[in-house]
Amino acid sequence: MGKTALVVGATGAVGREIVRGLCEDENYDKIIVWARRELNFSHEKLETQIIDFDEIKDMPPREIDEIFCALGTTMKQAGSRGQFYKVDVNYPVNIAKWGIASGARRFALISAYGADERSRFFYLRAKGKAEKKIAALGFKSLQIARLPAIKSEREQVRMGELFTIWLFGLLPKFILTNYRPMSAKDIAAAVIAAAQTEAKGVQIYHPREFI
Figure 1 (cartoon, rainbow, N blue to C red):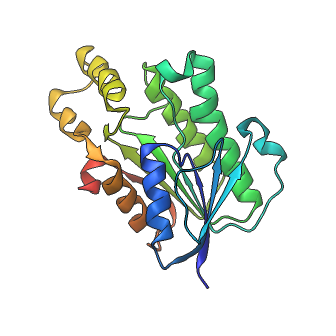
Figure 2: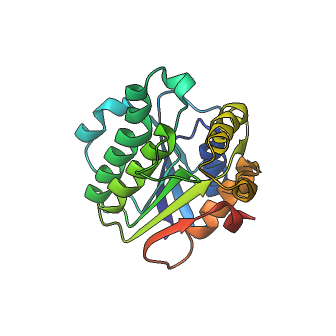
């Protein structure tokens, strides 16, 4: 019998490609998507559930094998640090807690290259905090994909953030090679492939490992 996966953040570039990839993967029988609006994509394996992300804590558990979390926003879209933190930290952590209650064995988190809870940059600090909080929950397998810039409608914003980090001199110039933009489809394929391994504990994947 195939696995059941939950995908959150499916309206974004990477999340959308993860959904498509999972639907075509014979290892999965059902793909559940949590979203605020309907997807412009359909498949016989796909079940879309429209939810209020502020009410995740109150959602009853259901049988889930794996969770792919690609939630994320930008400061421009969020409008404030508080709203950004809610979307990029609180929501993923609450989803992970729900996953533990539902018996999920694996959690795949789409994060950012340079994520560090001690970073002086709010964006990377928030990503690092989300990673740490989810790691503390004790999934059998937690796979964190620290992504470079993504070739999508959001690339300009993300590259602007990364250039600011470089400009302040906190990252050596050679590290910028790790920020080379990748297509959302390639990233999704790598994330799905990693989910088929037997690796246990916390695994962190960096941009060079997606090539």
